[in-house]
Each structure stands twice: as C-alpha cells, then as structure tokens.
Image (cartoon, rainbow, N blue to C red):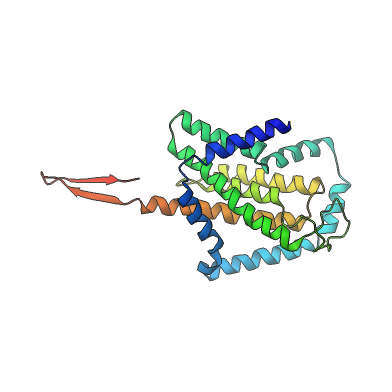
Length: 254
C-alpha cells in the first residue's frame, strides 16, 4: 500500500504540475493569495468575522460532539468515514479524482478539464499552506489524545483540520468552476466535503471547531483559484481586425 501511494503521489505531481499552470503563474497566485486581506472589502471582513464567530461557537460544543461520536460507532459509520477520509487525501480518492480529470482531459484533448485538474491541485496546495501555519500556531491536541477541548499550545496538530481543508478546497473548485455551476453539482461536491468533516470527527481525529475552520479555509482557497481563473479568461482580449474588404473580424486570443 505504501508503494502504491508513493507512486500515485508522484503521478499526480508530475501530471498536474505539467498542466497549463506554469511556475510563474503559480507564484503570482501564491503571492496574491497571501496578500488577500490587504485587498478585502467590508463584506469580506464581515465574512471573516462570521467564520470566527461560528468557529468560536463550535468550540463550545466540541466536547459534547466528541462524546456523541465516540458513543455512536457503527459499521455503516465506518464505511462513510472511509469515503470521507479518502476525499480529503491526495493519495486516495481526492487525488485519484484530480488525476482522472487530468488524464481524461488529455485523452479527449479537452484543455478545460486539464486546467480544472490543475486548479483543483492549486487550491489544495494554497489552502494547505494556511492550514499548516494554523496547526503550528495553535498546536491543539487531537480529541483521540485528550478529553479536553481546551488543550491549545500543547504541540498537537488538530486545529484546523487538514483533511477537511483539502476536501472543501477541491470540492469548491469542482463545484464552482464553469459559467453556470448547477445546483446538483454543488450539492454533490459540498456533501462529499462535508462527509470528510464527519469522518474526521467520527474517527476522533478532530474537534467540531477544527472542521469548521478547515472548511472555511478550503472554501476560501477554492473560490480564490476559481476567481483567478475567471480573471485570466477575461483578460484574454477579444481583438477586432479590419479586413481589406471592410468586414470586421473578431478573434479571441487565449
């Protein structure tokens, strides 16, 4: 299994980072991502405040939610958790989905699918940076190592949830990309990401508030990447050429 996962990770990295996302573009996106707050407007700051309030509220229920999951383990719960955990891992269902989209795009020569896979990976990487910093700063103990949700700064890696972050980053890109995302597609992918949050709490790997914070980080990164892609598409200028016979010819470059 270890060899399979290592091989899969190598395939994902080589395949997706050789997609249209060039190194310069990745660097530009990374710089813009970490500078986001400097460009936020009032509505975005209010959203951040709402997320902080929701996370603080969730903290009040962390221990009771942990106890509820611990007391309600079942075979069906194990199966659901396995799916949810897989969606939050690059070397499992989540990564296989990205790789499948990329290979499918290459197979049928669809640049849109290839770009979609690259965007998904970019969102996962960017959100992972934020979550990694959060884990180092808060150092919260996981619920499988303590019964107290107040064990912050103890060298743990519970807050925020990395699996939930990845799941929502990936799901957001897949759900929101395109000109008119359908309700059905959104429901499917956001439900799949929510299943990852469920799995992390069910397995006693994360507190409720860890998954709330992780989901917010993932959604933010996913929307950031989707919006950056739309900006690039808008910047592909449509030029007007005047032909000798007086006919105007429009061509979209990109």
